[in-house]
Amino acid sequence: MDWKIPLADLDYDEAEEQAVLEVLRGRWLTMGAQTQAFEAEFARLVGAKYALAVSNATVALHLAALALDIGPGDEVIVPSLTFVATANAVLYTGADVRFADVIGLHDLTIDPADIERCITPRTKALSVVHYGGYACQMPQILEIAARHGLAVIEDAAHAPGAYLDGKHLGIWGDVGCFSFFSNKNLSTGEGGMVVTNREDVAERVRILRSHGMTSLTWDRHRGHAYTYDVTALGYNYRIDEIRAALGLVQLRKLTANNARRGEITHQYWAALDGLGLELPFRAARGAPSYHIFPMLLPHGVDRQAFMEKMKAARIQTSIHYPPIHTFTFYRQRYSQQAVPQALPLTEDIASREVTLPLYPGMSDEMVAEVVAAVKDALR
Ligand SMILES: *Cc1c(COP(=O)(O)O)cnc(C)c1O
Image (cartoon, rainbow, N blue to C red):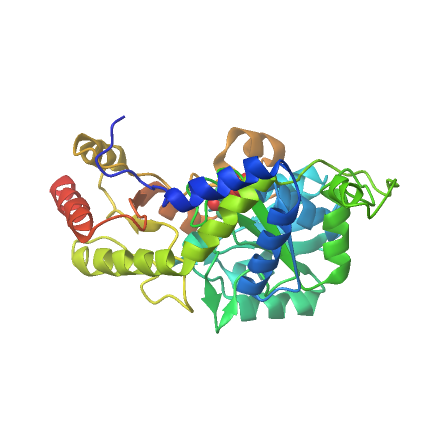
Protein backbone atom coordinates (compact mmCIF):
# COMPACT_ATOMS: atom_id res chain seq x y z
CA MET A 1 0.00 0.00 0.00
CA ASP A 2 1.36 3.39 -0.99
CA TRP A 3 0.43 5.46 2.06
CA LYS A 4 0.44 9.23 1.74
CA ILE A 5 0.72 9.42 5.54
CA PRO A 6 1.95 6.20 7.15
CA LEU A 7 1.34 5.31 10.79
CA ALA A 8 5.02 5.73 11.66
CA ASP A 9 8.21 6.70 9.87
CA LEU A 10 11.92 6.58 10.67
CA ASP A 11 14.05 9.65 11.29
CA TYR A 12 17.16 8.32 9.55
CA ASP A 13 19.69 10.40 7.59
CA GLU A 14 23.41 10.52 6.73
CA ALA A 15 24.32 10.28 10.43
CA GLU A 16 22.92 6.74 10.70
CA GLU A 17 24.52 5.78 7.36
CA GLN A 18 27.89 7.10 8.51
CA ALA A 19 27.65 5.29 11.85
CA VAL A 20 26.98 1.96 10.14
CA LEU A 21 29.82 2.50 7.67
CA GLU A 22 32.23 3.14 10.52
CA VAL A 23 31.24 -0.13 12.20
CA LEU A 24 31.70 -2.06 8.95
CA ARG A 25 35.13 -0.50 8.41
CA GLY A 26 36.10 -1.16 12.03
CA ARG A 27 35.67 -4.92 11.41
CA TRP A 28 34.12 -5.74 14.82
CA LEU A 29 30.46 -6.61 14.42
CA THR A 30 28.99 -7.68 17.74
CA MET A 31 29.02 -6.58 21.40
CA GLY A 32 32.05 -4.26 21.39
CA ALA A 33 32.82 -0.56 21.81
CA GLN A 34 29.58 0.66 20.19
CA THR A 35 27.49 -1.53 22.47
CA GLN A 36 29.36 -0.34 25.55
CA ALA A 37 28.94 3.30 24.54
CA PHE A 38 25.24 2.79 23.76
CA GLU A 39 24.71 1.16 27.15
CA ALA A 40 26.59 3.92 28.97
CA GLU A 41 24.67 6.72 27.25
CA PHE A 42 21.32 4.99 27.72
CA ALA A 43 22.09 4.46 31.40
CA ARG A 44 22.86 8.18 31.66
CA LEU A 45 19.59 9.11 29.91
CA VAL A 46 17.42 7.08 32.27
CA GLY A 47 19.56 7.58 35.35
CA ALA A 48 20.09 3.84 35.85
CA LYS A 49 23.15 2.23 37.40
CA TYR A 50 23.05 -0.54 34.80
CA ALA A 51 21.87 -0.72 31.18
CA LEU A 52 22.30 -3.93 29.17
CA ALA A 53 21.60 -3.96 25.43
CA VAL A 54 19.85 -7.01 23.99
CA SER A 55 18.33 -8.25 20.73
CA ASN A 56 14.82 -6.84 21.31
CA ALA A 57 12.39 -5.93 24.08
CA THR A 58 10.72 -9.34 24.11
CA VAL A 59 13.95 -10.99 25.25
CA ALA A 60 14.59 -8.04 27.58
CA LEU A 61 11.27 -8.90 29.28
CA HIS A 62 12.20 -12.60 29.34
CA LEU A 63 15.57 -11.84 30.97
CA ALA A 64 13.94 -9.44 33.43
CA ALA A 65 11.55 -12.16 34.57
CA LEU A 66 14.35 -14.74 34.84
CA ALA A 67 16.55 -12.33 36.78
CA LEU A 68 13.72 -11.86 39.28
CA ASP A 69 13.51 -15.66 39.70
CA ILE A 70 10.05 -15.86 38.17
CA GLY A 71 9.24 -19.43 37.12
CA PRO A 72 6.81 -22.34 37.32
CA GLY A 73 4.17 -21.89 40.02
CA ASP A 74 4.45 -18.09 40.01
CA GLU A 75 1.93 -15.57 38.72
CA VAL A 76 2.66 -12.17 37.20
CA ILE A 77 -0.08 -9.55 36.84
CA VAL A 78 -0.06 -7.82 33.45
CA PRO A 79 -2.47 -5.60 31.51
CA SER A 80 -4.34 -7.24 28.65
CA LEU A 81 -4.35 -3.98 26.65
CA THR A 82 -0.75 -4.30 25.45
CA PHE A 83 1.38 -6.02 22.86
CA VAL A 84 1.35 -9.80 23.31
CA ALA A 85 5.07 -9.93 24.17
CA THR A 86 4.38 -8.47 27.63
CA ALA A 87 2.52 -11.67 28.57
CA ASN A 88 4.47 -14.11 26.37
CA ALA A 89 7.72 -13.21 28.14
CA VAL A 90 6.19 -14.29 31.46
CA LEU A 91 4.99 -17.60 30.01
CA TYR A 92 8.48 -18.37 28.61
CA THR A 93 9.64 -18.79 32.22
CA GLY A 94 6.92 -21.31 33.05
CA ALA A 95 5.01 -18.79 35.17
CA ASP A 96 1.40 -17.72 34.55
CA VAL A 97 -0.15 -14.32 33.90
CA ARG A 98 -3.27 -12.75 35.35
CA PHE A 99 -4.80 -9.87 33.45
CA ALA A 100 -5.77 -6.61 35.13
CA ASP A 101 -8.01 -3.94 33.62
CA VAL A 102 -6.98 -0.38 32.79
CA ILE A 103 -7.85 2.80 34.67
CA GLY A 104 -10.44 4.25 32.31
CA LEU A 105 -11.26 5.75 28.93
CA HIS A 106 -9.02 8.70 29.78
CA ASP A 107 -6.06 6.59 30.96
CA LEU A 108 -5.20 3.30 29.24
CA THR A 109 -2.58 2.18 31.78
CA ILE A 110 -3.05 -0.64 34.28
CA ASP A 111 -5.42 0.12 37.18
CA PRO A 112 -3.73 -0.17 40.60
CA ALA A 113 -7.06 -1.08 42.21
CA ASP A 114 -7.53 -3.92 39.73
CA ILE A 115 -3.95 -5.12 40.34
CA GLU A 116 -4.93 -5.52 43.96
CA ARG A 117 -7.98 -7.62 43.02
CA CYS A 118 -5.76 -9.94 40.91
CA ILE A 119 -3.28 -10.74 43.69
CA THR A 120 -3.25 -14.37 44.87
CA PRO A 121 -0.84 -16.32 47.10
CA ARG A 122 1.06 -17.24 43.89
CA THR A 123 1.59 -13.65 42.73
CA LYS A 124 5.30 -12.90 42.45
CA ALA A 125 5.49 -9.77 40.32
CA LEU A 126 3.72 -7.07 38.32
CA SER A 127 4.64 -6.21 34.76
CA VAL A 128 3.21 -2.79 33.94
CA VAL A 129 3.15 -1.08 30.54
CA HIS A 130 3.65 2.64 29.99
CA TYR A 131 1.07 2.66 27.18
CA GLY A 132 2.04 5.10 24.43
CA GLY A 133 4.86 6.43 26.61
CA TYR A 134 2.38 7.72 29.22
CA ALA A 135 3.37 6.82 32.76
CA CYS A 136 1.50 4.23 34.79
CA GLN A 137 0.54 5.31 38.33
CA MET A 138 3.94 4.25 39.62
CA PRO A 139 3.72 5.58 43.21
CA GLN A 140 0.48 3.62 43.82
CA ILE A 141 1.83 0.55 41.99
CA LEU A 142 5.06 0.54 44.02
CA GLU A 143 3.09 0.93 47.24
CA ILE A 144 0.97 -2.15 46.41
CA ALA A 145 4.09 -4.09 45.39
CA ALA A 146 5.86 -3.21 48.64
CA ARG A 147 2.82 -4.12 50.75
CA HIS A 148 2.56 -7.58 49.10
CA GLY A 149 6.29 -8.22 48.58
CA LEU A 150 6.05 -8.23 44.77
CA ALA A 151 8.70 -7.37 42.19
CA VAL A 152 7.91 -4.77 39.53
CA ILE A 153 8.88 -5.03 35.86
CA GLU A 154 8.26 -1.99 33.66
CA ASP A 155 7.53 -2.67 30.00
CA ALA A 156 8.92 0.66 28.84
CA ALA A 157 8.94 -0.31 25.14
CA HIS A 158 7.14 2.97 24.32
CA ALA A 159 8.93 5.12 26.85
CA PRO A 160 12.50 6.18 26.00
CA GLY A 161 12.73 9.84 27.01
CA ALA A 162 9.55 9.70 29.17
CA TYR A 163 9.46 10.85 32.78
CA LEU A 164 7.19 10.92 35.80
CA ASP A 165 7.95 13.41 38.59
CA GLY A 166 11.31 14.07 36.91
CA LYS A 167 12.34 10.41 37.11
CA HIS A 168 12.71 8.44 33.87
CA LEU A 169 10.27 5.58 33.30
CA GLY A 170 11.83 2.12 33.51
CA ILE A 171 13.74 2.73 36.75
CA TRP A 172 10.79 3.07 39.13
CA GLY A 173 10.48 -0.68 39.64
CA ASP A 174 13.08 -3.45 39.87
CA VAL A 175 13.82 -3.62 36.16
CA GLY A 176 12.76 -1.79 32.99
CA CYS A 177 12.68 -3.01 29.38
CA PHE A 178 12.91 -0.83 26.26
CA SER A 179 12.32 -1.63 22.58
CA PHE A 180 14.21 -0.25 19.59
CA PHE A 181 11.99 -1.94 16.98
CA SER A 182 11.63 -0.02 13.69
CA ASN A 183 8.44 1.84 14.65
CA LYS A 184 9.46 2.82 18.20
CA ASN A 185 10.68 6.27 19.31
CA LEU A 186 14.32 5.15 19.12
CA SER A 187 14.81 2.75 16.20
CA THR A 188 17.58 0.31 15.41
CA GLY A 189 15.48 -2.18 13.40
CA GLU A 190 15.57 -4.76 16.16
CA GLY A 191 17.02 -4.02 19.57
CA GLY A 192 16.23 -3.62 23.23
CA MET A 193 17.63 -2.54 26.60
CA VAL A 194 17.30 -3.77 30.16
CA VAL A 195 17.83 -1.11 32.84
CA THR A 196 18.07 -1.60 36.59
CA ASN A 197 19.62 -0.19 39.73
CA ARG A 198 19.95 -3.69 41.23
CA GLU A 199 23.40 -5.20 40.85
CA ASP A 200 22.10 -8.78 41.26
CA VAL A 201 19.56 -8.29 38.46
CA ALA A 202 22.17 -6.69 36.18
CA GLU A 203 24.64 -9.53 36.75
CA ARG A 204 22.03 -12.18 36.04
CA VAL A 205 20.91 -10.43 32.82
CA ARG A 206 24.54 -10.01 31.74
CA ILE A 207 25.24 -13.73 32.13
CA LEU A 208 21.94 -14.98 30.68
CA ARG A 209 22.03 -12.83 27.53
CA SER A 210 25.19 -14.58 26.35
CA HIS A 211 24.85 -18.35 26.92
CA GLY A 212 25.46 -18.17 30.66
CA MET A 213 29.15 -17.56 29.92
CA THR A 214 31.43 -15.76 32.35
CA SER A 215 33.48 -13.96 29.67
CA LEU A 216 32.68 -12.51 26.25
CA THR A 217 34.36 -12.91 22.86
CA TRP A 218 35.10 -9.17 23.18
CA ASP A 219 36.98 -9.67 26.47
CA ARG A 220 39.05 -12.43 24.91
CA HIS A 221 39.70 -10.33 21.80
CA ARG A 222 41.09 -7.59 24.01
CA GLY A 223 43.26 -10.10 25.85
CA HIS A 224 41.27 -9.76 29.08
CA ALA A 225 40.33 -13.44 29.27
CA TYR A 226 41.47 -16.77 27.86
CA THR A 227 38.61 -19.08 28.71
CA TYR A 228 35.20 -19.09 30.29
CA ASP A 229 32.85 -21.05 32.47
CA VAL A 230 29.10 -21.52 31.98
CA THR A 231 27.22 -20.89 35.20
CA ALA A 232 23.56 -20.88 34.06
CA LEU A 233 21.33 -21.99 31.20
CA GLY A 234 21.73 -18.86 29.08
CA TYR A 235 20.62 -17.64 25.69
CA ASN A 236 22.00 -15.72 22.76
CA TYR A 237 20.07 -12.48 23.30
CA ARG A 238 22.90 -10.15 22.28
CA ILE A 239 22.77 -6.97 20.19
CA ASP A 240 25.31 -6.27 17.44
CA GLU A 241 27.58 -3.29 16.83
CA ILE A 242 25.63 -2.06 13.79
CA ARG A 243 22.45 -1.70 15.81
CA ALA A 244 24.27 -0.23 18.82
CA ALA A 245 25.83 2.40 16.51
CA LEU A 246 22.35 3.23 15.13
CA GLY A 247 21.09 3.47 18.69
CA LEU A 248 23.78 6.01 19.61
CA VAL A 249 22.78 8.27 16.72
CA GLN A 250 19.07 7.88 17.46
CA LEU A 251 19.69 8.68 21.12
CA ARG A 252 21.03 12.10 20.14
CA LYS A 253 17.78 12.81 18.25
CA LEU A 254 15.44 11.51 20.96
CA THR A 255 14.69 14.66 22.95
CA ALA A 256 13.91 16.80 19.89
CA ASN A 257 11.91 14.02 18.27
CA ASN A 258 9.83 13.39 21.39
CA ALA A 259 9.18 17.15 21.63
CA ARG A 260 7.91 17.18 18.04
CA ARG A 261 5.70 14.14 18.82
CA GLY A 262 4.31 16.16 21.72
CA GLU A 263 3.50 19.15 19.48
CA ILE A 264 1.69 16.91 17.02
CA THR A 265 -0.24 15.22 19.83
CA HIS A 266 -1.39 18.58 21.19
CA GLN A 267 -2.44 19.65 17.67
CA TYR A 268 -4.52 16.47 17.37
CA TRP A 269 -6.08 16.99 20.81
CA ALA A 270 -7.09 20.58 19.98
CA ALA A 271 -8.38 19.80 16.49
CA LEU A 272 -10.30 16.62 17.39
CA ASP A 273 -12.05 18.13 20.40
CA GLY A 274 -15.86 18.23 20.33
CA LEU A 275 -16.34 15.44 17.75
CA GLY A 276 -17.58 12.88 20.27
CA LEU A 277 -14.20 11.10 20.30
CA GLU A 278 -12.53 10.04 23.55
CA LEU A 279 -9.00 11.44 23.59
CA PRO A 280 -7.09 9.55 26.31
CA PHE A 281 -4.15 11.00 28.25
CA ARG A 282 -5.08 14.67 27.78
CA ALA A 283 -4.45 15.05 31.51
CA ALA A 284 -1.27 12.97 31.34
CA ARG A 285 1.03 12.66 34.33
CA GLY A 286 4.68 13.61 33.90
CA ALA A 287 6.49 14.11 30.58
CA PRO A 288 5.34 11.45 28.09
CA SER A 289 7.31 10.21 25.06
CA TYR A 290 4.14 10.42 22.90
CA HIS A 291 4.85 7.13 21.15
CA ILE A 292 1.42 6.70 19.53
CA PHE A 293 -1.81 8.69 19.21
CA PRO A 294 -4.78 6.60 20.42
CA MET A 295 -8.40 7.78 20.24
CA LEU A 296 -11.72 6.06 20.88
CA LEU A 297 -14.54 6.27 18.34
CA PRO A 298 -18.02 7.08 19.67
CA HIS A 299 -20.18 4.04 20.48
CA GLY A 300 -22.03 2.91 17.38
CA VAL A 301 -19.44 4.07 14.83
CA ASP A 302 -18.29 1.16 12.62
CA ARG A 303 -14.52 1.03 13.18
CA GLN A 304 -13.80 -1.12 10.15
CA ALA A 305 -15.67 1.33 7.90
CA PHE A 306 -13.89 4.27 9.56
CA MET A 307 -10.48 2.72 8.93
CA GLU A 308 -11.47 1.90 5.32
CA LYS A 309 -12.32 5.57 4.74
CA MET A 310 -8.98 6.64 6.19
CA LYS A 311 -7.29 4.10 3.92
CA ALA A 312 -9.12 5.51 0.89
CA ALA A 313 -7.51 8.86 1.82
CA ARG A 314 -4.18 6.93 1.89
CA ILE A 315 -3.80 7.53 5.62
CA GLN A 316 -2.69 4.52 7.64
CA THR A 317 -4.36 3.77 10.97
CA SER A 318 -3.97 0.92 13.44
CA ILE A 319 -5.45 -0.64 16.60
CA HIS A 320 -3.64 -0.68 19.99
CA TYR A 321 -4.41 -3.32 20.98
CA PRO A 322 -6.41 -6.42 20.31
CA PRO A 323 -6.42 -7.49 24.00
CA ILE A 324 -4.26 -10.47 24.88
CA HIS A 325 -6.95 -12.35 26.81
CA THR A 326 -9.06 -12.57 23.62
CA PHE A 327 -6.38 -14.32 21.53
CA THR A 328 -7.01 -18.00 20.73
CA PHE A 329 -3.83 -19.18 22.45
CA TYR A 330 -4.58 -17.34 25.67
CA ARG A 331 -8.28 -18.31 25.66
CA GLN A 332 -7.32 -21.97 25.24
CA ARG A 333 -4.66 -21.77 27.91
CA TYR A 334 -6.69 -19.96 30.55
CA SER A 335 -10.41 -20.34 29.81
CA GLN A 336 -11.68 -18.50 32.91
CA GLN A 337 -9.02 -18.66 35.58
CA ALA A 338 -6.76 -15.80 34.45
CA VAL A 339 -9.74 -13.49 34.16
CA PRO A 340 -11.05 -13.49 37.72
CA GLN A 341 -13.46 -10.81 36.69
CA ALA A 342 -14.27 -9.46 33.27
CA LEU A 343 -12.11 -6.72 31.80
CA PRO A 344 -14.97 -4.39 30.80
CA LEU A 345 -12.87 -1.29 30.21
CA THR A 346 -10.21 -3.12 28.22
CA GLU A 347 -12.89 -4.75 26.07
CA ASP A 348 -14.78 -1.49 25.47
CA ILE A 349 -11.58 0.41 24.65
CA ALA A 350 -10.22 -2.32 22.39
CA SER A 351 -13.47 -2.35 20.39
CA ARG A 352 -13.38 1.41 19.71
CA GLU A 353 -9.72 2.37 19.62
CA VAL A 354 -8.05 3.74 16.48
CA THR A 355 -4.44 4.93 16.34
CA LEU A 356 -3.61 7.87 14.05
CA PRO A 357 -0.26 8.54 12.34
CA LEU A 358 2.39 10.05 14.61
CA TYR A 359 6.07 10.51 13.86
CA PRO A 360 8.53 13.40 14.20
CA GLY A 361 8.72 14.02 10.43
CA MET A 362 4.99 14.85 10.18
CA SER A 363 4.42 18.47 9.16
CA ASP A 364 1.61 20.60 10.59
CA GLU A 365 -0.07 20.31 7.17
CA MET A 366 -0.02 16.53 7.39
CA VAL A 367 -1.59 16.66 10.84
CA ALA A 368 -4.33 18.93 9.45
CA GLU A 369 -4.86 16.50 6.59
CA VAL A 370 -5.31 13.58 8.99
CA VAL A 371 -7.76 15.64 11.06
CA ALA A 372 -9.77 16.56 7.94
CA ALA A 373 -9.90 12.88 6.94
CA VAL A 374 -11.09 11.90 10.43
CA LYS A 375 -13.90 14.49 10.25
CA ASP A 376 -14.90 13.23 6.78
CA ALA A 377 -14.83 9.62 7.92
CA LEU A 378 -17.02 10.40 10.95
CA ARG A 379 -19.68 12.13 8.80
C1 LIG B 1 7.12 -3.37 20.76
C2 LIG B 1 6.68 -3.84 22.09
C3 LIG B 1 7.27 -4.94 22.73
C4 LIG B 1 8.24 -5.84 22.04
O1 LIG B 1 9.33 -5.19 21.52
P1 LIG B 1 10.32 -5.93 20.51
O2 LIG B 1 11.56 -5.10 20.60
O3 LIG B 1 9.67 -5.86 19.16
O4 LIG B 1 10.52 -7.32 20.97
C5 LIG B 1 6.89 -5.24 24.02
N1 LIG B 1 5.96 -4.52 24.66
C6 LIG B 1 5.35 -3.47 24.07
C7 LIG B 1 4.33 -2.69 24.85
C8 LIG B 1 5.67 -3.11 22.77
O5 LIG B 1 5.04 -2.09 22.18
